[in-house]
Image 1 (spheres, helix red, strand yellow):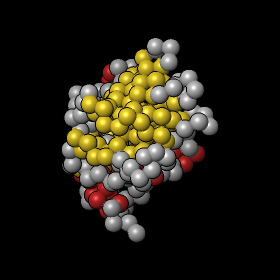
Image 2: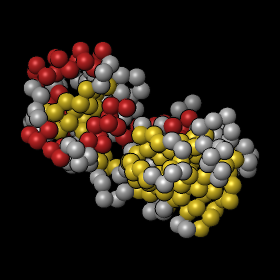
Image 3: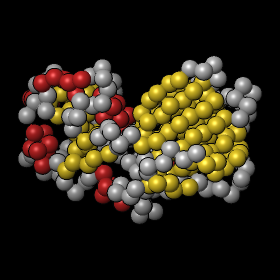
Image 4: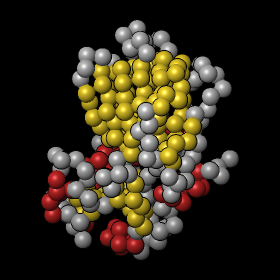
Length: 262
C-alpha cells in the first residue's frame, strides 16, 4: 500500500511525519493508494478537499485516513492504536469507510463577483461589523423567512453537525439521515427561532439586506469571502468523499455518541 501524507504545520504532526515516512515512504499524489492526514480536523478537511480539487488530479477519489496530531480531532483516528501490534498499514486495511458529500457554495459580492467553494462541514454567513446582519432565507425558490436579524446563520451537513453547528446550539444530525441543519447564530428577531431541518436535496438562498450598511462575509469551512450580498448553498451529490476510520470508531458511531454526552 502506497501512502501520501498530508501534514499540518503543528510540531506534533511534523515530528510524527518523520517517523511514519521513514517507515512507509511518501508516495506521490499520482502513485498513492490512500492519503493519511496528520493533524487535527482542519487538516482532515484540507486533505478531503484535495480529493476533488482539479489542482490535485492524482488524488481524485482517494480515501483519507486521519491520525490525530493536533487540537480538535473529531474526524481523526487516535494516534496510538488500541492494539499496539497493529502498524499503520494494518489499521488502514481494517478501516471502515464512510461516504460523505460536501455542500457547494456560490457567493456573490456587492460588486458582482461570484466566488465558489465547497464545505464539508458547513456553509455559513457572519456579520462583518458591529451591525447585525439582516437576511432573507429562500428554500427551493420559496421565501421562508423575510427577515432574520442575527449575527449569522449556517447550513450544516450531518458530518458537520457536531462542529460549528453544535456550538451555535444546532441539532446533531445522524449521519445516515437525509437532512441538513439550518441554524441561526445569535438570532435577535425572531428571538425564539431555533432553526430548521431541511431535506438534503434543497437549494438554500441567503439574501443580505443592506449589504453596504450591514456587511456580511460567507464561508465554506475555511474559505471566506467578504462583502457578500447573495449566497446559494446545496449538497453536491457529484462529489464523493471517502473517510476511513478504525473499526468501531467510525464517523456514524461518533456522531451517535455525541448525542449522549452530558
